[in-house]
Image (cartoon, rainbow, N blue to C red; front, side, top):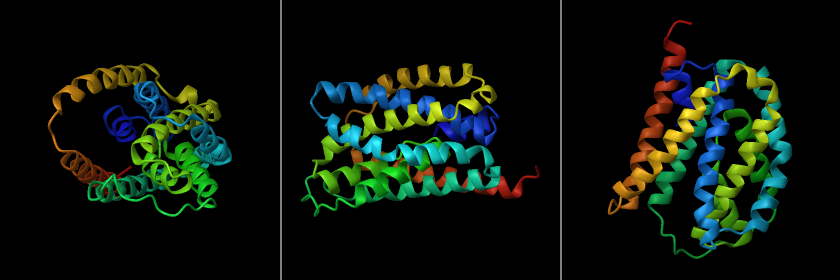
Length: 226
């Protein structure tokens, strides 16, 4: 949600929007990870392993972002949004208590690098890929995988932000700072407001919103004169 906001509400360039988004995603993931750590719902060893394996992808994505045409960057981000929506819709239809699938160790470096590339390119966390990978490879329960993924997202985002140091000057950092503060306040309010709202409704509603935003971004990109 941060990237479209920076693009269309604050008129950032795609590179500046994806760079600023990293700061927002890192702050949000870290804020979400702290209570999970206190509750024992994070496996730090697995989180650090996933992050370390993905550093090469994070570096590659961060360095490719400045040289990729803006139309490709925005279109790619829209596709990532659709993928996230599909994963969230599928998750809303599944049971968290389902049996853990057979482990596949080869999947870990592949997904870790892919998530790193997406983080560096598009300024997204990639949790919709991290959680299934943690469940599949490490056999973590879904709740533990979700908490662990927040640590991975925070580490990946900070790493990508450091790798994109040469894009810092293109960002008006007052805006993402205000977004971070507003997001933290909003999360506290929303966590109290949505008590009693079925998880399935929240997840499917957000999935639909992502698809609508992705479609609008592509239409705006190709139909609006430069």
